[in-house]
Image (tube, rainbow, N blue to C red; front, side, top):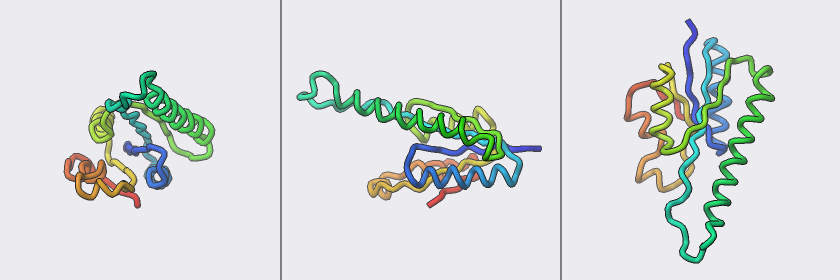
Amino acid sequence: MAGLIVVGVDGTDTSMRAAAYAVGLARRQDARLVGVYVRPFASSMVSIADTYGSAVASEVEAQNEVESQFRDTVVRERPRLGVDFELVVRHGDPFAELCRVACERAADAVIVGRSEQPLHRFAGSVAQRLTRCGRWPVTVVP
């Protein structure tokens, strides 16, 4: 019986290493792989001086570019990877959306990259929150 692995991707180096690890694991275990890219909502704190919303527009453009790159990579690399891979794009909080996708798809494992932001040592990263959640085995890739 093939399982399902969920991997969080966001374009950072650690998430790309997590995706590579997940592909290898899925290949070895003959599992399906679901990559989850969570688009955060545009910043709610917009500068008063930014009357035309150019900061939000550039943030959305950057998110569109990352999503487009992921989709292109999935289409281009799927035959070479040797795994059944699907990319799911969601909007919102990365922790909540990863949990939602893992529950909806009955995931057997969740893989994420380690956070590179120093603030997460105090506030808690997505990886820490997933680990504390305890619903699935979580692998955090450095």
